[in-house]
Length: 140
Image (tube, rainbow, N blue to C red; front, side, top):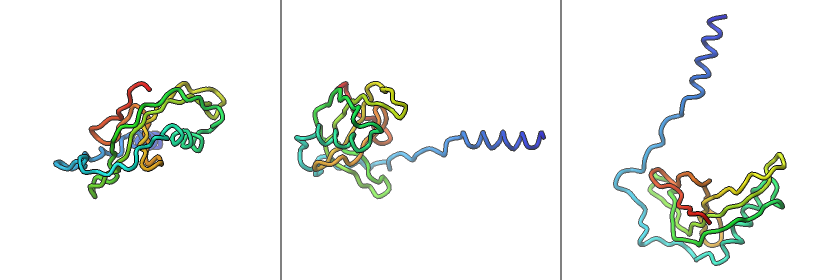
């Protein structure tokens, strides 16, 4: 009985331990933001983000859009080991929608990277775009 409990306890502790640190960006490498191609400015950024939410929310008809920030040239790391990045325009959007229990969640903010009219990546705010660089959302 004690042996079984001991094995069970070790399994729980190992399951709770982090899988290891994510390696930082290779020292000395940063994306070339000066000569980067950011794509076309997303003048329709609100509709692009609304379409993304409609495809990804549990109850898209309940969505109430609280606000959007203006697009800013930005980037995210695509693959740090291959030294590649995604360039586009970042927009932060806040939306209140119902969850799977039917209750409203309160306004949630996400950071979006849009390139040529498409959301190429997104992050919950606050979080990080990549190690050492947090999302840059001000209150929309």
